[in-house]
Length: 122
Image 1: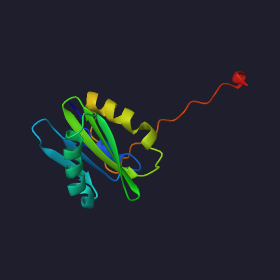
Image 2: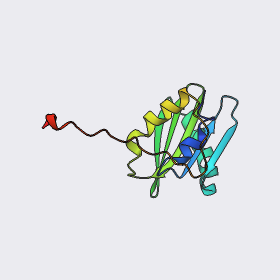
Image 3: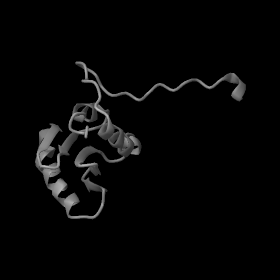
Image 4: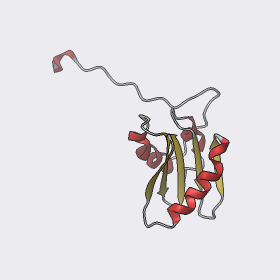
């Protein structure tokens, strides 16, 4: 799978505070604000105790999204109510399927530009 390979892309997305990816062997890879490292590791254990593929946890002003994709699991911290929450599950699914090219220095993941509507649409 590709979540581990794409951890930098997940971390670079606007609004993401921290990311942790677990592989089938239980190895954890972490990026982001260090204060979330132990919290995300504990949250991974909570997901394992449920029969769910996705859970959300709210801690103060932050939300943790845990999602199992294939044989990997990802935990993502973002501010509660942040706009990226709407597309986060889809972004994780896509990143789990295909390894992305490495990020360049200073790169961030940006939303794709929208095409202007033709004037004939009214």
